[in-house]
Image (cartoon, rainbow, N blue to C red; front, side, top):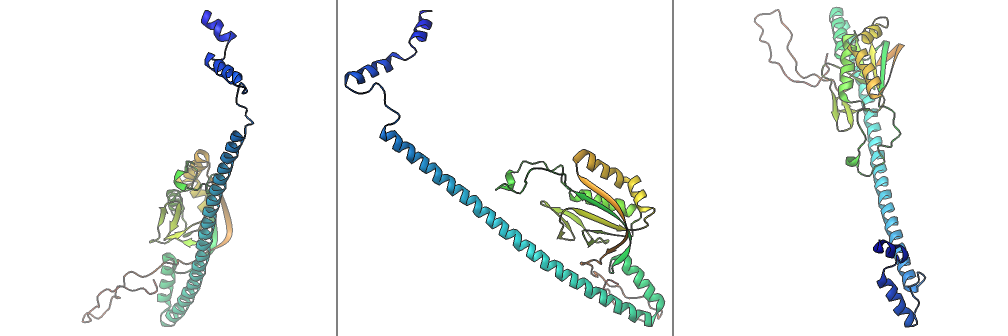
Length: 292
């Protein structure tokens, strides 16, 4: 109790009191004032250093943002050039295919019909008709995922993002429901097309896609939507919406156009069957010509 009483009545340490008395006997104030010149100079120096450091750090972030914006603009410009060249190549392929078909019709009408049918199946020519459209996009978020200086430190969950596997399952479900031709964001899917996931980008035939992802399927408008909704595709799409918050919409269009494949090429050529048994067939060769 004596110790508690002493602490309550004299909270200041006796050493501090003795030091104050010695300063008082020497003609000095009992304590150092916070207004002393040395303390003020020290506070000004510390504040100046903190301000300089903050300005430098902010300037570094601005430089990173400018560099990032410049790279994004360059990528977008080059992508526009690639898209323009791909459109020109597609138009030229269509013109060549039309000339080939006209030449074949002059030689053999049945052969021309076979080539036209195979070209549609292979994706060598554009397709137009009624379509069923499925649009999927990442779940809405209020976080700016691209604002961080280091994307490796981003801790935001990726459960609400559309991945390549989602598009693969939806595409296979559309084929199963009776789709005759399918494209994703204008990229025609063929028997050799691939849907891959590279980092955070989804690639179709090595072409990056942008959100949202629009799957356009040409087919019977009276049966294709119902078969898709009742099959694996409809169930999977409902799970994406309810479990992960992914945005999904479906619509039926009276007319839609799916372009020809931009990467279609002939990998092997086989000589036609000849009726002359004495003729020696030529070996198969590789070519880069028209797939028909």
